[in-house]
Image (cartoon, rainbow, N blue to C red; front, side, top):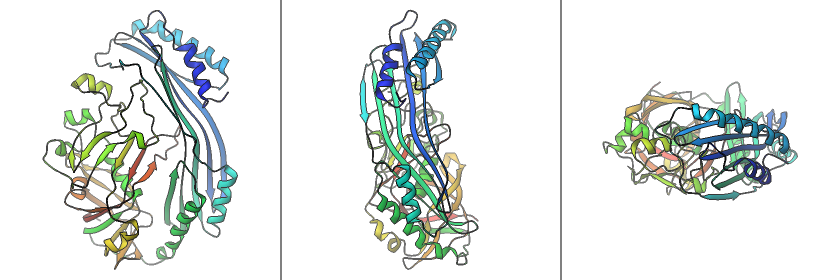
Length: 444
């Protein structure tokens, strides 16, 4: 029985999530995956592996006391149940010694949810064929991760949540020489080899430009287009405390000026925590059901925050499915009206920003960010890519860029899953269009 099977989790829940003396409730939270990982170098397989792993977090609650422990699962139901029973007994024996937590908030309603989606993913053999065919003759360096990821929750009150999605993410660089490369990514739940091949071909068309001398730029303000990949870096930085209730209440949020109506973004800016249209589960590790969407910004104005259970208790706010960090897991910036095919003509003359990295705040209170351009960024003249850019540092306020500086958003929002695989694959994502901005400030 695989750790990603629903029957495996149901067996754990039936045995462990039962009323026991000394606890008001027992909960179990499962994290599991069965993933293929394939690394490519020079369009050939460098490393290929398959990982199946699962972790069960058991918790016991009595009044305002809560204790938990996590057990690595083997997939052998008898062995895992034995280990978890022993862990539960240990937790219950220690529970009376745990200090009371005045900010503990747990769900009162008994709710259940079920999402079981089977995507269309390539087999390892099909993926290797797609890469070797599309990247023939190219210095293709990339990494693929794909397969089912599971989150599940149960408690002794009868609550049951199940979340199973199959997704993939592959990102790669086509190297021209040395550090000159075009970086691209493709992700989703339904693999299309034709779309993958098209993305490789589009990236390959830009390689000859990288052989040209970079266009020298002086520090100053430039008209710029940000691809969805570059936008994901900006929005990801914004998620570092920007939307959290605690950060807003303590004045440490990068969007405090928006909250205080001291600043406003452009009327076309609409942001939400859009769980229903993402790959994130519709419940938390504590068993709270998440709303389908939480409005964060409408018409450029702040409309809500991400409220964790602890913030809910502390500030008297309704918990709305936020994690402990109150960071977005399914942030969505609504698309605009600019056709993707018209991006270069709309930019006319300026900067085409494919990637950004090393982002951080230079002034958190002003929502001012700094970072570096990366990989194939280009100078555009007359609506055409004409020369690569040298690596440049920017320093600009997100509120300015997406307030008075915002010219247009593209008409398609792209789902960009979190690509990190440290310890385990993630289910968080960003969904964003590209953006055309006036006056983006380069400093050196």
